[in-house]
Length: 117
Image (cartoon, rainbow, N blue to C red; front, top):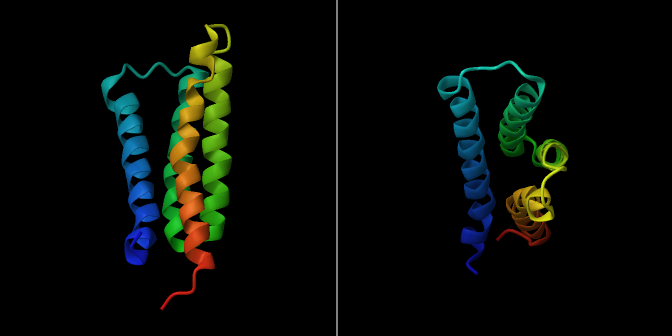
């Protein structure tokens, strides 16, 4: 893979996640009748913190990666907990939310190991 392309893929994935979570937040705030129930507020605040952590990824990559994993992990655990009483396939469906953060981490670590020329 082209080295310059591999360098920009994590930033494109982070931009995708920022857009995705921002759209989800806007959907909750603008389109739903804002029932101020605790699970909805918790998930929305986790999404806001994910956006903040992905922005921090551009400023301080090591801190941003740690924050990203903390908040995305919290969101996945919360979604699993909220779906615990349903069938087993839907309980573990939120684990797919770990794919893009894994790719971002792997690409950022492999870019750091490779000397820039």
